[in-house]
Image (cartoon, rainbow, N blue to C red; front, side):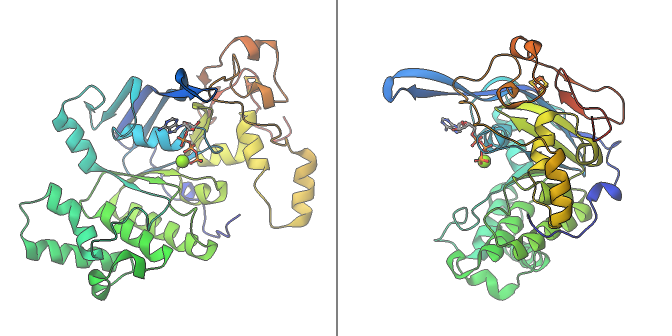
Length: 350
Ligand SMILES: Nc1ncnc2c1ncn2[C@@H]1O[C@H](COP(=O)(O)OP(=O)(O)OP(=O)(O)O)[C@@H](O)[C@H]1O
Ligand code: SF4
Ligand SMILES: [Mg+2]
């Protein structure tokens, strides 16, 4: 686990009354894949299955879940880079899935992405200055060359780089520096939302904290919204106001960071939290004895379990769980929305 010592962001920011920028409803993404090794035998893989959530202005929504649960596919679908089979994506009041090319262009200018592998996401033929300037040259061509240069240099300095770096190429930089370039490029056009897909997973732990802190500072300064995808629940807690947990393409739980980390109701969320290593061995032992361990393989998304997708690994599963898919429900204002027939209560012992 990363060593993050900052207070959780939800302790000092309230975004609950902020305007909704992104509204996603019943979004599904399917892929046609070869079955049994035969290219002519096709099966449908439901990578994202009826997902709904909002992102408000100035908030960070953390997105967690095991590998293959559909995080990147969901992120890509939001900006039209994955094939949407059903549902809607509404950005600042305009529908983008069935919208016009102009609405999609607005979305792509206003919603930027930061990727896991910073070096691979930067064009090796271009200088850092050119890379950071590119969104302005595409979307703000009315700005003169001098103004673009000025904005690029200001942005490079803001992310911890300097004017000398502008003439160099990405391969001359460390992973952390490349990610700073990726952040500068994403932010130069003043977007409303930045989707960060595992932005620190490929970096050393010491560098991870620096990049997360930078993103957090920029988010506050600019009232920016972030969708922050990560495996590491400690990192997500540090930066997020709310957290969404996915499993096999579905949302299992969503709620304020405090509610999720302090009293998760869904057995899957509890299992993920129990799996986070604790630095204190005594505490770790206590927790392990009470923990629900996340055992068993993740089922194939080509053949997901009936009813609740998590039921093959869930110690609370009942007959109902095998026949009926649980909807996302909230028991009270303070609690999270959980898709479970037998959710945990507020107390950690339940
Ligand atoms: N282009 C594609 N064609 C076919 N299947 C795909 C495609 N992209 C993703 N998938 C499948 O969709 C499911 C979700 O993949 P996705 O990459 O979104 O997961 P993820 O949660 O981002 O995983 P990770 O944590 O490993 O990045 C997986 O079963 C994956 O194999
Ligand atoms: S619905 Fe049933 S199987 Fe699914 S998480 Fe809840 S208790 Fe477990
Ligand atoms: Mg991914």
